[in-house]
Structure formats: C-alpha cells, structure tokens
Image 1: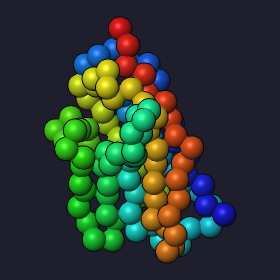
Image 2 (image 1 turned 90 degrees about the vertical axis):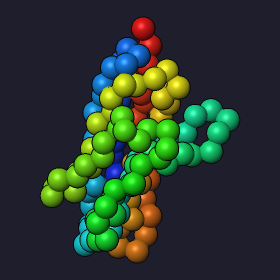
Image 3 (image 1 turned 30 degrees about the vertical axis):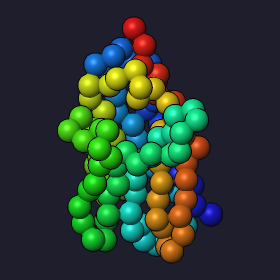
Length: 115
C-alpha cells in the first residue's frame, strides 16, 4: 500500500559527507511527518532527524545536531545531508513516515565510515 525506500548509503571516510534519500510511494493522501532513525548493534533505535510537515519545523538528535541536515521536497522525498561523519555513525539508517494515520518504515540503507 505504502512504501518507503531509502538510498544513498555507502562507504565514506571519517569526516566525509553523504546524502541519504527516502522516497515515499503508493496510495498516499497526506504525509504528516518524516524522519530518519539509526540503530547501532546492541542499542535501541535512535532519532536522527524529524520533519513535522503539518506543524512545521525539524528536530535533530543531540548526537548529530550541527552536522546533519534534513530536508524534503514536494515530490514525497526526504533527504539527510550528513557532514563530518564519524566512525560511530556507521550503521543502518531508516526512513520513517507518519502517513494517513499510520506509521511506516523503510528497509534501511547502510552507511559505512572507514578509511
């Protein structure tokens, strides 16, 4: 019915940059919010960024604030510009959407930070 698909993950050197994308598709009426989360092994899923489309505004997790920037366009896409990547940022990043009264998750995109 609704699908979120992430892309843009890959291998980057420490301190480098990467841009993730999330595309929402399917039978969608209204997207209320879209966010990025990440989850390291042995830890709970962590908020990276969240855009409230209806209410306006974007919030960031404390660990990424000042280095990551979330944005969206008007074609059901969301982006995460990641700068100053650290090795600890190497994990799977998931797209989340609040769409038509339900929540959806993408399958994730892998980010690897390595020299």
